Image (tube, rainbow, N blue to C red; front, side, top):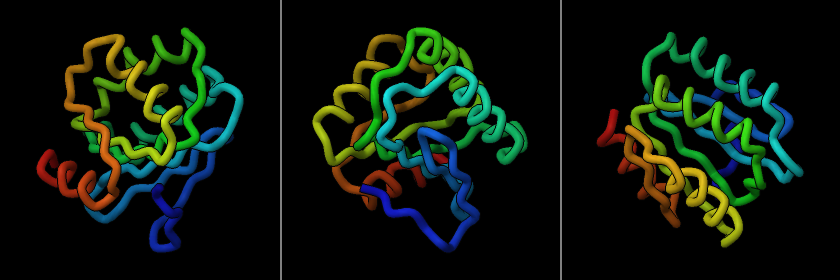
Length: 131
């Protein structure tokens, strides 16, 4: 599981905590919530666009506490993520988190590489190759 850093500016949303590291990799930790709402999903995507200057980025997402999402959220994310994403590495300490993430990313083809990891260091190494 990813630990929140004090090194970088951290932004908190109702269902996630995110920050960018010195390489421009976005770190995201999912919180335990019932469902992420579409309004928040739009806010997060807009935040990423602004902070990445509309450049495609690599993301490291801790999906340990990821929960179910609505169809509207999934469809919006599936349409918007390809515009801002080079690659996504996911890690999870829970079977449920892995299942939810795999369902989202495997139900619809993604035009960027997505990979599940058990270890943060391996995930970062893989993402660094995608920068």
